[in-house]
Length: 259
Image 1 (cartoon, rainbow, N blue to C red):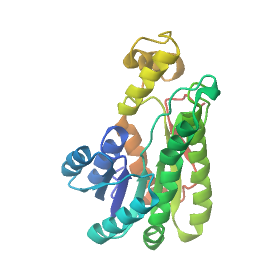
Image 2 (image 1 turned 120 degrees about the vertical axis):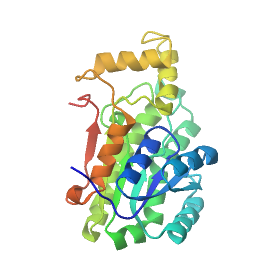
Image 3 (image 1 turned 90 degrees about the vertical axis):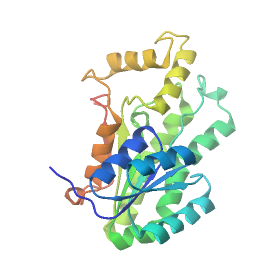
C-alpha cells in the first residue's frame, strides 16, 4: 500500500537512529519535515537528506519547546504530524535505591514531560489539521526492565500519557498512539548494551553488540532484531488516512517479545 502524507511533520530526536529513519520515511511519504534535536550538526545533516529544516531545541525546556513550535509554524505552516521520539536511557539501578533523584527527574523530563510539552505547544495546529501524534516508547513500558527502573517506569508513564491524550483529543479528530520498539540497534542501544554488560558483569556479553545479540537470541520469539526502518514504517502508517480510527493504542514492533 502506497501511503501519501500531506502536511508538516515534527520529529523530535530526529538526528539519529530511529528518529532519523522516521524523518526519512515521513519525507518519502510526502510530509514536510522539521527535524528537532539538541545536536545542531546532526540535525542539519538529516534535514538536508530529507529536504527538511533543522531546529535545535532542548525538549525538556517548556519555553524552548513553545518557541520552537512557533518558529516551525511560522516557517513551514501548521503542524499535522507530531512524532515524539526524543528519549534517554537512565543509569542502572539494581537495587532501585542506587538511582538518584536526578536520574528519575532527567529520565522523566525527556521521556515523558517533553512529549506533553510538544503536544501542548502544537495542540491548536493538531486540532486545526485533525492531526496525528505518535509517541515512541518501548517494550520496557509494557514489561519491566528491573535493571533500569527510571527508564522502564518512564516508558510505562509515556504509554499512559498516550492514552490520556488520545481520550482528550479524540473529539477533535486527533489520534494519539504509541509505538513500543523491541530490540533495535541504534545509538541508544549502544549505550544501553554497555550498561547491561556492566550491570551483569559481562554475563550477557562483554560488549554492547554482544549483549544486544544475546537479548535478540534469547528473548525474541521471531529470532531477529527490529530495524529503525520498521519503526518508521509503523509511524508513517499511523499518520495515514487509513489509521484515522486507530487511537490510544500501544503498538509493539518487537518480534513477539511482549506476547
